[in-house]
Image (tube, rainbow, N blue to C red):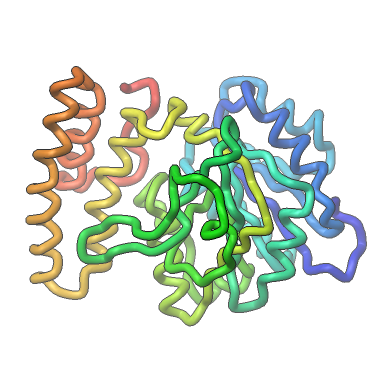
Length: 308
């Protein structure tokens, strides 16, 4: 990577936090990318393990920015994007460090992008390449739910069709650097989860397009840094709190916000009952705390994985 080339320059930004268990596989995968004009930019969010040193050992040309605390995904990505803007990169590839990639993924994403177009790959579960693992699709701004994402569904003809999207996960997305001049930074009050939904809405309002490029393939381990698995107490907490904040931020009227709030509270009943019946008290507690902290105005970093 990072050779002189006519290809657009790309800063590959990842936020690292205590990822020693899987960071080697990620870095080796990045080093196998067949794109000639890219550099790995790592924002280390106060890791207490050896993962930052392992990154530098495996990829000496990576630029590692060491933070003294857990800055979270939103601020970490902002720090990485700021560095890429200072260095004059044409694009920023935001990517989770619990992913691996087909060697041509960046080349395919860059070929489909331009100064007003963001691109996302087809993301599959790392432990089951037959299933889709992405929220790339649409978002219902009335109810605050994702639509048409194929998440958890079998990979097949429908999931391999290129199309324009309303939203996507920042698990892996290529963004023109100039977008940050027009859209602004990621909202750090989210800390993590839904910050990309907010950013992509603002970007589309500024005339940017988001294109799904299924030929580009990424494999994802799913929440490896937040406890592992599809839904952990840590993820339940931040997803609940931030969903309330996101919808409040973007509702066009008090009436629309009141409608969402009514729907949200009514939908807690079918959510809490299964938790109680299955004895999943940690998930119930996490969701209650998320609701409470939103109404208390406690945003940004509030709880860590170890708090659950």
